[in-house]
Image 1: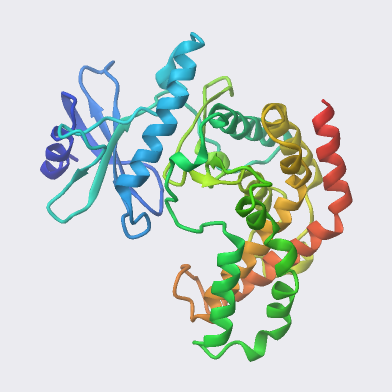
Image 2 (image 1 turned 135 degrees about the horizontal axis):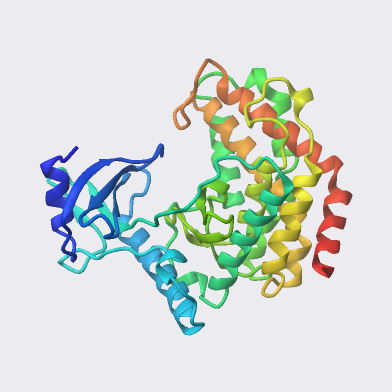
Length: 367
């Protein structure tokens, strides 16, 4: 399709394109994404994307984050003489007015970036070698940004992984009991509150600076990595959530999903077990890149970060359930409760495997 509105939006960016077509692209649930195909046939194509400003309330700040991080990586690649730099880091196009976005008549925010062709996206990790490759990619991404101070960036989503803030929200939900669901879920509430002091240790470490503030991706899914046709990593994409945080968040959140043998909303808790081969491969891949810049306090907390992320997500699911299901999309009555129970069961599984996970980290640091 060639919607005149889209063509007009593209014309507001500081680039001259001979547009062949503009068509919907991908399956994202947050932003609206379109592939801008150009002529001649061998000319590069582009992605036009509407940023969801209901979720990302400071689009200008978010785009500054993206430009700071991509410019930093690009400079490093160019200084190292790396070939095909535009395939190794995302390239955003500024608007003619100098901003990194264009507003339409309805106030929506649109961005334009170079489409990286001839690449492969993997939707789900099935084998340990995929976990190893994904972990190396995210570890390398953090390594590239490890000399860039985290406080140069804004928080795209304030307090996104702040355990102290999340716990306060949870306690407020309990007090308000908006949906009248507190009394029937006391055991689950207690299991979260009883772990509160331990689980908020990462945020306390960031607050007292015993843990460094770093630039983190915050969405460490394998489909946010582009691979070439030979299965080599090209670059990390989907940078909307790149912001200050702890390196532990990226590691822990990856294992929250990859290390679980069941989906995050599995109702049969007996199916939730620890995927040791995937965890081991991910730890080895990540540390092969990240051990060069991580401090000992971060390494010591890598295994713990997996438990933290399961606790945080379980608490967020239960918080939304207690509030009457106002945040997460649900497929059926009680879906958030099922999710919360599954996350807390996975947390228990990780606690049972604590010593194994910590030993794998220690061994991975020696390789």
